Image (tube, rainbow, N blue to C red; front, side):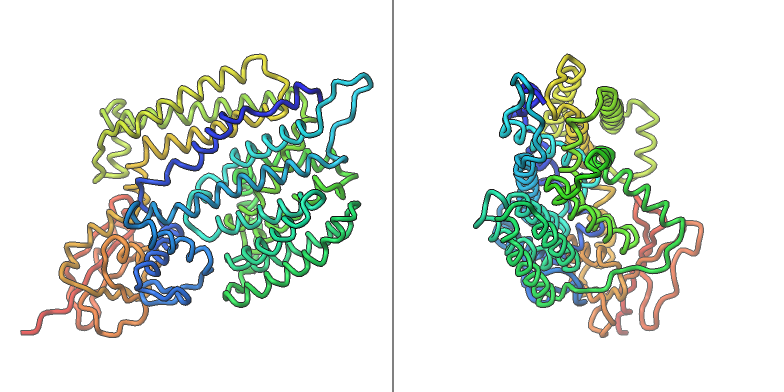
Length: 548
């Protein structure tokens, strides 16, 4: 590795890339179904006093969920809701958690790259990379690899407990990575991160990561790292206690495996972990005799724990998300050893895929706004018949700037810029950021119409006029949250106690089937309707007949 190869990514460019990844979608949209809407419904319920902060409920039914992440969102709604609106206010702390994840992963990679085993060999006549410059360049590559992973794109922008788990896991990664250099900070980070991971809904993963971290520290060649073992054990014990106090221990291990599910999980890993997983496998192969080195063993603790949880839960993508920080670190350490043909393949695949994606987004946007081309416009009208397009210059300008920046980035990368170690991750990360920004500007109104439950709540609102309470026994929690958040009704989702004068049920029923289910005794059917973007979903509304 030469000094030219260890050049760092310009800080302004790196900060702009991170801002373009974090900020789009933060404002101007509703919570999306399903987990995002359920989480926000609980936060709004607590912030507005409709539910206890210690025992949150949705529709009068106790919620089996982690308290800590919902406290963050509810506190933000209570504090910032009058200024920003409830959904945007709830996203603020989770956006900060995403920022914290990016920062922690950068510093974790920086410390791991500083270890002697991870440093490149010195040249006979000088000119090799400076150790700190090399570590900084590797940290830049890690951050780009993390942003480029497809699995983080949507889940990283939701207001769900898994984002708090991700930030806590990144905190553990930093603590284990920085152990030879930061004594007091590492101890504090462990005592916070592992209990936070357990309190955010992943106590078993906190226990597994703690045990793995204990083993890595015990076998370390650094004396100060071996002294950290009691602290890791203590933090793990605190995590177990936090999970017990928060009520997050639950049996989620699935049974009844079959080959079809194994194939589905393999496909999930292939796209969710892309493009980090091929590079991470190359790192493990190149260092196959030296897995005990810190830059391999530390991130591998997180990766193996998350992959094991994903398998135990039969393909849970939210468990798999916790593998991304460690996988990004492993992927970065493959870059100095990749052949030019491999880096060229990554560049061309990223350039073609994201350029075609951007063109598709722009073509559909043009069709929605002008009707040209006609075929995409007809497809949108068929899939979302009640959607009414509106032009927004505030959405158009960032999309234009992002597209121009992408064209410049492609031109820069296809030029003679072959030295920087992070060069192969520039186009994958930039392409993901471009796609997300275009979706959250040009397609945001259309996606909001399709993925938000507000149109459904507005459609049933005329038939629930005058009702303060709606009985909806067994209704999907996301739709319960939609009725409470978008309609303002008090929903009784448990057993009907007879106090509500309206009743609602949602069935999965094809349009050609019977139009309405039989009315329960004592109720009269007033309306049946279908969600415009899901014709297989039938909603029936009943009211109690007025006394004669």
